[in-house]
Image 1 (cartoon, rainbow, N blue to C red):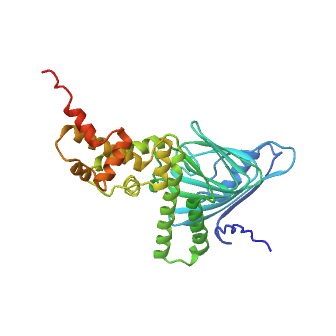
Image 2: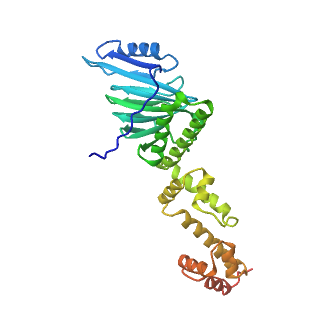
Image 3: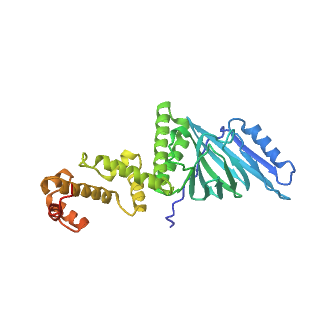
Length: 333
């Protein structure tokens, strides 16, 4: 008996949902104009046409089929396309000012811009900021589900323009399960339930972005710097400073924070402990506070724990550090 689990099919829209379904002979000399004209006739403003360029073949036909379902201010498109190239975004472009996610079910998309390239095959997804132009290529027989969200709802870090993820990653799986359920039940939901579903979808989407954003090489150093600055500001006043507290303050997941520090060859708690030890050492050498007082002031569990971690970091005990200062000759006046 087979125990394989198959992914349930997407059910976008219903029989009354507007659909673009265009077939154009490859050999037609005016194939690109014919495709655009027919797409505009069927889709209008509801499903605007991107800029497309068909390959030239002596036989056969190109087919594109898109079904769109609106979910309040979000929308989902079930897309099928044969091999084609084109561009999207930019002034007056397709899906301008939206965050677009392609969930590839079969075939492959290739998105490229001046600064980034993303190849999105079956089993992966790609989240793109679409306000600037993207060129794309679609492999023959490609099917994808595209999620379109208002750009104002999603904060991308730094100059990141696209993020990719495996569809079976925890954050992506949660989002896709929510979307499948919402598309199936949308016609039966009241206003309040629809709004709740919309907000839950956005929250799960933000979780996906936060979870994947560490893949941007420009973001990890910025996140580490922001975390270090936050830790520095809370070293003395917050005895319960933890990675969870830091991650929440910076609006990222704990996993993302850990991965960022991993690229920096340290850990969150390692950095926190090291900075508290540095501050404790400075006070040992500049004040007359007792070792036990300094240990408590910098939130060490007890004096013995403080002495042990201090010696491991500096190679000497706190008392030895203080004695070295006491025997230094006075600076010349």
